[in-house]
Image (cartoon, rainbow, N blue to C red; front, top):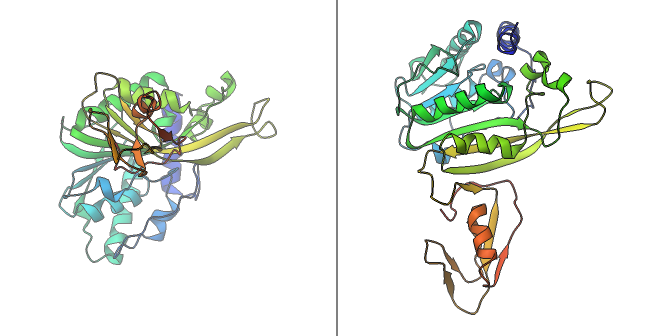
Length: 321
């Protein structure tokens, strides 16, 4: 049995018998005015963060969500895209698609604005998406891509890039790990399916996105997730795993490399009212400006009086690029 088959079996069981916190953290459930999320959807929230952000979801976007879970995020996306087929959910597991379909009937009873035909459920593979090129405004996945091994991860990301419109957004949440893992952990298909042993360092995760062509990367959250301890797992040391929320934007790749936002800010405190670097960044006296890591490095070497903050690993737009 391959690791992908093991993953499908795990989530087939999870669809038939919902298991709260199966593989991931119990994340806060974002509520919006007039939105009621059925309890069954909350019980089937198999994600390690959230991919739903209001700033991404303007003007009735076409949304793609891969790995439907119990349908919770599909319902949340529908809140912002109230049109027939405005949201497409893709999953390879028949039982998970059917569970979401049934959960939408409950959602219709609890939300007078929602109709099940707002969501188009499609059987499909993240490695070969049944979606047209350049047809999606916002693509998302939650705690799925970390399961993939290197070549499959590259393929899954390239598929998301393919279906996005220019300047479209790929919004994701996944576990990451900065420590090395031994082969026994890496090759344990169940631990990989449980969103544990497939976790890779953040820099490798970001590189996979930029290698696919995404010109702008936003780190929106970074938080504690799990530990693999020697008394419970085949490891000689305690391994700490975090989860991140990240957006990759299909902007043209700058000549000097991608713009990666990790939550740094720059404050100009010179004698003038403002500082203009002549390449698009104007910093007003003593006012913080969110900057990508690339701009932060340039400003810090400019010889001008700047305070450059450390990465906060939290960024929600409004920055330098």
